[in-house]
Image (cartoon, rainbow, N blue to C red; front, side, top):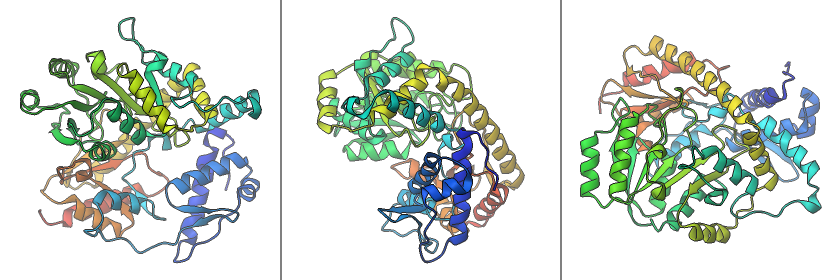
Length: 466
């Protein structure tokens, strides 16, 4: 195997090499993998590169680390059959983590191009600058340098600006959402969400005992505005959770005038707007309108994560909110997140140097390229089984079967072929979108994706109407 010398891509080559080892050794018993140092010597890369490739595979559930013994493959179980005891969502994620599975269900744009190499390089440089004995203490609200960088990035004008003390960093998306709902006293309230909606958001709202009302998006990515207004009039909605730019997983973009009207209605009724900005910078069009451009700033909370853009080495979540500062401070202090100060400083340097902007330009171009590749395959092998609408951002298609079938049964059928899809109903608490699925184009394109698409079409074609 010949490895590229570009350090920003080296870990991807190591990753693919290890995937080959894992798939070659898959069986009913676990197998020991090379040590970090052995693999680095074998492939001519650094130990940190091999460590990161192993971390990715461990996060995907393909391997496991055993203290003092090293890394091992996981035994390959038989293909799962969905049972009533487990939720469909849990089955999707458990299946995707099995060895030798082709996960068409992922939503990790940084798989195509990450900033993890530069991030770790900056972190090492900072570690040399700040010896351990003089390292800054853990900051419970987040590293000040990163909070300031985010406040600067979200500031648009003298009328639309943020301060570092209005930014909070947490361990992940779940944590920051939980604390935000608590700080704003929204537990047990009523939330309006766009549908389809992120499963992570739905689960967190459910954990907060919040009644969720789903407002369906049309195929054009727009709400039925009269129905939206009527719902706000009829129901005691206290917060609305909406995507900042492109609607994920649907992939469409709502017009600016619609967002302006919605923000007007939310402000009239004193409803909190939780703007999901996780995909906000992965819209393919220039300068898309965001809800926060029109929202009441005193009833606005913006939340996001770094991993969609930077990669798995930056898993932190963050929120921006101008209100209830004392409550946010108290709750984040109580939680006491012990997040690496150096890692956060390194992320801040990516923003302050504008490296993030250069990266985003390249990442969006790659996403468009892979989207077009998958669209060609979908049109070639679809045989009239689905409707294809090109997304306007993000990392996946939102496919609709032309016949009224249950995509969960298609999911079960494809598991036997070691292919994992994300049925549409995992993006709804009410079990909507049964004819839909999310299909990612952030895939391992060294595999035969065309064959997998053909198998998907066959599975849909042989499924009986629901």
